[in-house]
Image (cartoon, rainbow, N blue to C red; front, top):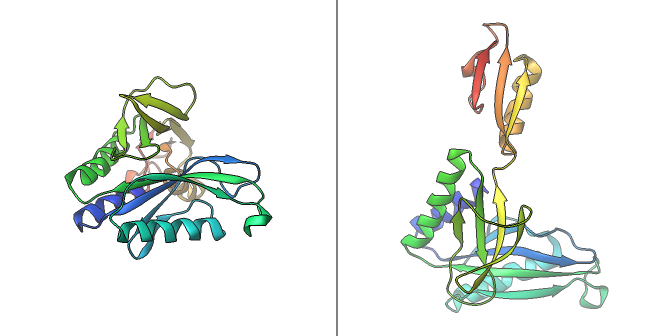
Length: 215
């Protein structure tokens, strides 16, 4: 999500509109489940994936065509059955969220990046259907589970929570930890590294860690 938001921020800074394309629902056999995102600009894919293959290519082409015609948010269902030339057999509902040029798009990305920096749980809300609503970032939301659909001020949103996984405590700051901590941090976990040896409990060796301490 961090890299996605950085791409959205870059598009806003370059004054380039784009589409945030999200797989919000799937039935039967499908390449991905809900919560998969990709960003598409006028020249094609900018970041991410919603499953690859023919469906993703068709979604990219559709987003590019709509950008050439002025944009606008909409939802589309893709048939993944053999009759449609697909192999999976199910279907996917995909939301195309138009992100226009302007401060609001840049502010959205900045707010999301700020929430990630705070390392506290937050919600990403993607507007569903047609309309001009932009995604929202919220810190608190009353929703059962980590993802679902919610209505706010008459607008339906697909909501998904991020940064709720908590911290991973790594006991021992040796060679295994030096390989493990960057991987865990890349996956979005907060890492706290502990070691009773002063020469190993070195914060410089773990720049991505939340905290390194000799115990």
